[in-house]
Each structure stands twice: as C-alpha cells, then as structure tokens.
Image 1 (tube, rainbow over the protein chains, first blue to last red):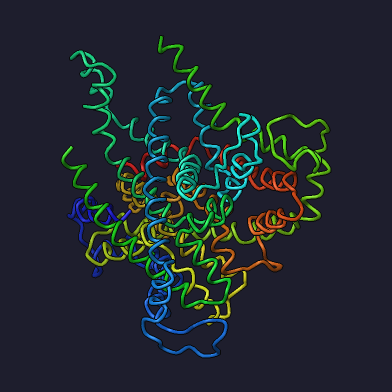
Image 2: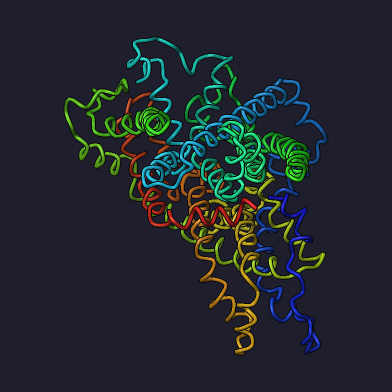
Length: 308
Length: 271
C-alpha cells in the first residue's frame, strides 16, 4: 500500500560494504539497472495513470454517444447529477456500504483467524474451507445469495418464513454488505493468521507466566501485535468495497428504489445509456472520495501502529 | 471444554456459512428446470447434472467464454508477474528519491480507483477498444501495483550477499535476476498469481466496458447474460452449472499454490 511508500526510504537496504567502488557508474546503476523497472512503470502510466488524468477533463465536456464532437461544458454534468439527487444518494450508499463491508470482512476474518490459529491438520483444512468464497467470482456469489435470500428463495423455504431479505430500502444495503464481508473473510483471515504467526512465542509464554487469561493476552499482546495486519486489511477492505460492483449488481441491481445504487452501479447504468461524460463525472467523484479517505486512513493507522 | 468446543464451533460455522451456499449451488445445478424454479435446499428428486452442464455449454456459449477468458487472463497474469518482478527488484535494492517516487507511483494503483470510463476513451483512440490486447493492457495496468507491492516487500527480505556472490562469479544483472531472484520469488509469485487471477478471472465490470458482450465475451460476461435472461426463463439450474464451471479453475489453482500463498502473504503484506 502507499503506507509502505512512506517508509520506503527508511527500509531501503544500507549501502553494502562500500570498499570496492570501481567503474564510472554508481554501483546501483550497474547492479540493478533502471530498465528492469521501466516497462512496468510505462504500462502503469499508460493504462492506469493517463486514464485517471483524462478523468479530470472529460467530466467537464458533453462527451456522449449523441454528440459527434466533444465540447467543453463546464460543470453541467456535476449540476445534473447533483440536481437529480443521484450524487448524494450514491455517495451516502457507497460510504455506508464500504464501512459496513470493511467491518464485517474484518470481524469475520479476525474471528476465524483466532479460531483457527493453532497449526493442526484440522485447522489447515478448515482454513481452506473458509477461503473457498474468495475463489468464487463476486458475480457468482451474488447469484448464490440471490437464490438464497430471494423472497421465493432457499432461506425462506428452509425457515418457513416470508421475509423480503433483498427488498427493504433500509436494510438491504446491510444484507449486501454482509455478503461482501462473507466473500472476502477468507483473505482477511489469512492476513490475520500471518500476523498472528509473527508474534514471538516467548511473548505469549511470558503473558501466560504472568497469569494472563485468553482475553487479557488478546488485549495486551495479540491485538497490538496485529496492528500491521489490521492496517492492511482495513485499508484494502474499505477501498475494495468502495469499488464494489458485482455483488450488488447480482443481488439487487441497485434496488430496491435505488437504495443500493453505489457509484459503480450508477456509472454502469449511465454509461449504458450513452451518457459517458456524466458517468465520468461520477468516476471523478469516486476518485476524489477515495483519495480523501484513503490517505488520512493510511497515515492514521500507521501512526497507531507506531504507538502500540 | 474449549478443547471440544472449538472444533465443534468450527464445524458448525463451516457448515452454515460455507456448506449451505455450496450445497445450494451443487444441488440446484443438478436439478431439472421445474425443480429449480424456486431454489431450495432439498436434494433433487430427479438428477440431471449432465444435461444441465451440456445446456450451459450450448446455450451459454460456455466453451467460447472459457477460451476468451484464458486468452485474456493468462497473458495479463504473465505480464503482471514479469514486469512486476523486474520493477520490484529495482525498487527493493536501490535507494534514491527517484526510486522512491517511482515505487510510490507504481503502487498508487492499490489505493486509487481505475478511471474506467476514460480508459474506454483512451482505448478507442489507440484502436484497442473491444480487443483482447486492450483488455490485457487494462488488467496489467490495474494489477501491477499488487504484484509490485508484494514482491518489493519480499525481495527486501532476501539477503544481498546472494547477489554479491553471483556477481563475484561474473554474473550480470540479467543473469542474477533470472537465476537468483526469480527462483527465490516463488512463494510471492504464487500469491500474486492467485490474487491477479482471482481478480481478472472473475472481473465483469471492466470487461463490460472494454470488451462488451460480443464475440470476445469472457466467462463472467456470459454468466451475466445467462442470468439476465433469468427473468423470462427461470434458469437457476443453468446459472449454477455455470457458477460451478467458472469456479473450478480457481479452486484448482488455489490447491496447487496453497502452501506458498501463506508465506507470500506473511512476507509481503504484513511487516
């Protein structure tokens, strides 16, 4: 993550030895020449960065399937999406969805990691079982849960109930974010497990000797030591779920009454209508929101790591 | 108490959280249409998995979708790994302002959302819209950050003495990279392969914008089209046959690479 960018300089390897400084070029340029890195940087710039830069221009034009040439129109697109309410509604839905999805994904993941921490054959098998949802495409996951949660679906028929799980304008967004958390809990679990594995055994031993119970050990040893895993998980979960599309599209398609219409669903719908510049305007808003949230979040979580 | 409570809890959770959805997928994919109209957890009264899978292949263009997916995903993953490893090596070993800046730039893709609408615009201008090379370029650009990030963290943990020893034997940078760094990267390559394959294999959002629903449609797009016909056809049995076939390759890759994944994550992400 960008958090590593912050500590790049500190973590860089010290200049090794330094006695034999032969040749005219600095040894770094000889031993690790730039041309190993340039293709990656070039592809990234051309197909990731340039589109993101273009995204600061096209939202201010009338680009659509109805206009042969593109003309500058100022803030018209933003005015349109603000006036018809889709901007604020999508914003609220996306942020709520992302926060809930990150919460569920991390809660489930941490719980599973603690439950399956010990390295036994039994636990290794069930780690793989809980990782299964990660391997199934998000679109497929969406259809599975549509079949489960539909009013005519499997859950109601098994429980003998008649609950519209996906039909509430208030609660469906929560249900869908639980599904998102379910799909990605296996990955969060693996990362928390990696974090748990990094805790020195004598530290846990010492806590035991001092008479700390499981809860006390968790609070004072495990939880602080899990800080880097938490940083990684919370950041990727939050940002990943702001970019969500498939699960929502497959379960609700943005409904009921647009109550689950996140940014990407809106973009997809509007692009399909040929209103490219308007979709692009929403994409720019998403970009700015992600930047505004991600940077303080990463900095804050990093600072927290250092304090723990 | 907890000695038996823990495994019992694990079994219960696995059964409810993973077992039930999995069971639903498997039984529905084996039911005739009449039984599958209202999805439930009952076992099929009449088993017909073979017919359903054959229908999914013929009606859902499954074979074409599979080939299309492979033709896009395999080159993307290969490019992401090769380009990413080269870049990560330089980023991990050199230290200067310029290197730090290039590294920060390259992994910024982990945070920033791809600008999918203007990607379409750019590809049109390059003549790559709706083509496989265009799709490959987009996936590579998007997932490079992930592999560079994981690999850089991993290479930093490899002692430089290994490289120096080879250098004393007269090996040049390319040789050192191919003979020493790449083989040592195996665990993190496994992790990156899984991650990138996962994203690219199941992606529908970007595929929709770049490839559209035509001849180049990948498996997820086909699944979406099969499911969108759902409103008129009630074809849950076909949808779930599709879901099974789409998931199997990922499960297979995971089973092969599984052991390496955990060590890759340990060294790449959490430090």
